[in-house]
Length: 213
Image (cartoon, rainbow, N blue to C red; front, side, top):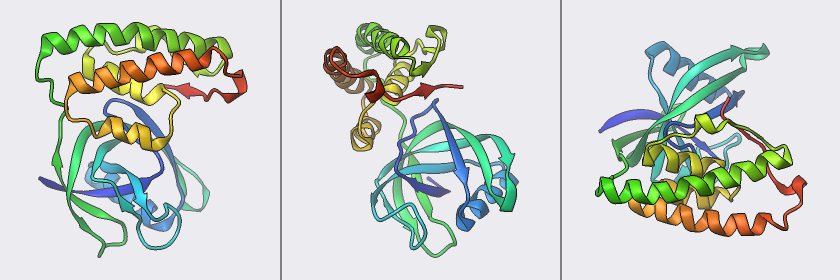
């Protein structure tokens, strides 16, 4: 277990996936400055109760993902734009609300690939669904993603699939909370089949934009 600053947000970050953030609130400017100084990540956690805006820290869900700061662009008034990359899935053990920003004691929670052969076989079925979905997004002009950027390993493919699909935040969090790779691949495959069918009648303006750059 280890201590890590926590950033409650209305988004879900997955390992290996990018997350750009505009940092403007004083407590989070301090948090990012501390992380840069100490060369350490912070944790991104979805808000379960409360608000990401000013005031008392929101109460987060139990499962989150560490965010490594890859780029920093200083802005005026001490604000900054940062690009982060998800690294490690974790489970919150304890929360500390006594500091200027939320801090958690967390335990690593890596995805369990309990049967590599079976999981790889299931992932082989998920990949064409993801490619078909991305192809449809590209037709709408709502994506900036090359097929070469799609991970080949089951965990990486699953987390990309969970990131790019246009779903409510709570549904994405449910994917992050899954412990076993085989279950994650199976549920994603089911959702992709459903969403591909729905996209046949979806207006282009209803489709979001996604980029890994």
